[in-house]
Amino acid sequence: MTQTEKPGIVVAGHGSRDPDAVREFEALVELVRARAPDDVVTHGYLEFSSPTIAEAVQANLAAGTRQVAVVPGVLLAARHAKNDMPAEVQAMARDYPDIDFHFGAPMNLHPQLLQLAQERIVEAEATSPLTVRRTDTCLVLVGRGTTDPDANGEVSKLARMLEEGMGFGGVYVCYSGTATPLVADGLRAAARMGYQRLVVLPFFLFDGVLVKRIYAAADDLREREPGLEVLKAGYFGVHSHVADVIIERAREAVAGRAAMNCSLCKYRVQIVGFEQQVGEPQRAHHLAVRGLLAQVPATASATASATAPETAAAPSYAPYEPHPIEAESFRIIAAGRDWSGFPASHLTVLQRLVHTSGDFGAVDDMYFSPGAVESGILALLRCKRVLTDVTMVQTGLKRQLLEQLGIDTWCGVHDRETHLMSAAEGITRSAAGVRRGWQKFGNDVVLAIGDAPTAIAEAARLIRDHGWRPQLVIGLPVGFVGTRETKDELRRCLQVPRITNSGTRGGSPWAASVVNGLMIDALNQLAGYEAR
Image 1 (cartoon, helix red, strand yellow):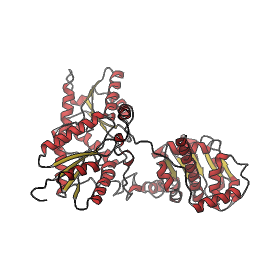
Image 2 (spheres, rainbow, N blue to C red):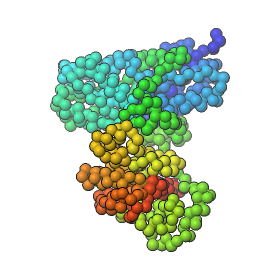
Image 3 (spheres, rainbow, N blue to C red):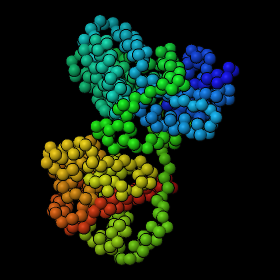
Image 4 (spheres, rainbow, N blue to C red):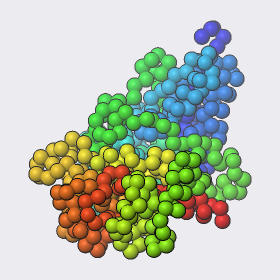
């Protein structure tokens, strides 16, 4: 930089439907500006609110900066800090190749934030007329909750540091969403631990929909348990400690010392239970709601702020459009035999099986339990997870449909824990993968088995003996050892919807084709609802 150029700081916030959260974030930005008078400080939001991060960068550059540090105004490194905000910075670097961009680390467990947590707890204790020893107090720390175990683990780490540093008798960690236990469950569990007092501390920067829910849950517990003192500590809010951490992160970024917590990042190293996400493309997920509230009328924004959760706007759906060659194939299939004897709801699945097998007779052995197709479609739209016995089924699912419908897939056959379970229990890896899927996801899955009869046998055992109720079981393995018998066993599993066939024919492409057919029908149904 030249002598006349100022460094730039862009504070990148999450954004909120709640105007209280937006006001507090902007007050914090003003505090950062006051404590860094030699910098150009602007702010932008990832979701819902305006200005966007791109607009904040533009304002910063308009003030004459040539070096910009984009600092996540978030506490922990989860999806927003690892995926969405870096995507914004990358786009800005592409649009402004002559500008020196730096990306800062999130605030993380900075010592000043630990001091601020201590301050909020002491303030909460001061509101009580009672004198209660810390050893008779349980700290309930409420994190945001993410799909990233590293970030969730940092909440537990903070809880342990506060427990030991302040002398609490116990600590309980819960989350406002995504991770478990949720707030209400956590408060109930903490109330049963026998402490005289609970201090509920939201590990949040600002007010908003989620903080209000946390306080409401604490109020509900206080009413249900009149003999238990429940104190509500403040969230971090607009404080000099928070502002100073943001400025420090900006300085670190420019100096090349910005350090993400990558030693246990699920995208970079194999974390127990998340092995499949190593190397996963880190795509932005926020684009549908970037600057959303500026795109709707003010009255609608106010209503949404007061009533809606902080979730993305509903996506728009278009009917499935096959490739011209695929469309011609299905025209031939539709004309190639008499389909009048099959229920109309089964035709998409059946015709895709003919397309996969190249055999019009493949559908004659198929079995659908009553309502299986309808249950499968609803499950895909509600649960949004397909569990497979082998990766060949997983890779046979149409990627475009999975992304349009937001459906996740999981196959544990090659995971380390599956290998350990297989060896320890004396079962096949496919059966162990199914058992792990039951343990991880419970009933909210569509189970698609295309290779291993042992996977069907294990699923049937779990359904019969352990009350597993997957939303739909598709069992179409191919082979001669145990294949007929396990398919017959699945057909007798009256407790769950199921799609299978008789005989030895089948395979992973067949199972994938059934799921693809269900996804096509699901997408077309959504598109039909929107067209009404």
